[in-house]
Length: 259
Image (cartoon, rainbow, N blue to C red; front, side, top):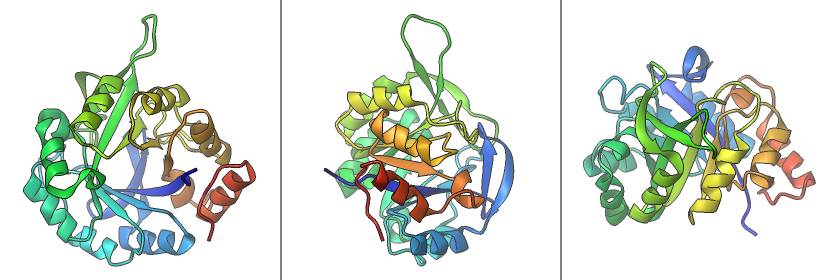
């Protein structure tokens, strides 16, 4: 059985790591370069770096910050935010990223997924999804949001499960699913969302949004069928350390890479 990955997430704005609740009320969490070095030494399996205001501000990602962050890492680095073309992806990979994550641009131009996969391979292309649960209806449904960096995001007429399936068909090699409803609340992942998407696609799914305890991480891989867990607040503010999370999952019978 493949090991489950623990992935700290660096949401970066203005060159600083920040963390909010449901993409609002952000507070400073530190320097991305220092945090990257710390999490690498702590035993993180991978790192995700999101320039969360690049798309909403209509600008490119800060290559210098990415480059300095990548220099501190010996683990895979995924970078997203403001990537709108294959040329942008090329620049990001040259800056030190191992994978590129596209969200808003992929919704606006679905062919960008195929173009990236053809240029760099499926393993390099990650689809980022920010979604909210749609209330009412006989069956659970989640709606895709874009431009989520500064104002809570813009709703799209796009079903999250259908979009995940389509993105995988186009060549996305991994999907990061972030629940806006759960983001930063520390109340647990949306297990139904993660399980529904994990069962619908044949590529790895990374769960994001809501981690507050180690039990939440266990639940989302055991019940939500996620292949990896993304977390920010519980690591950035010292609630838990990477080793604690891995030891807890191992004790629960979940395969992880121990230091």
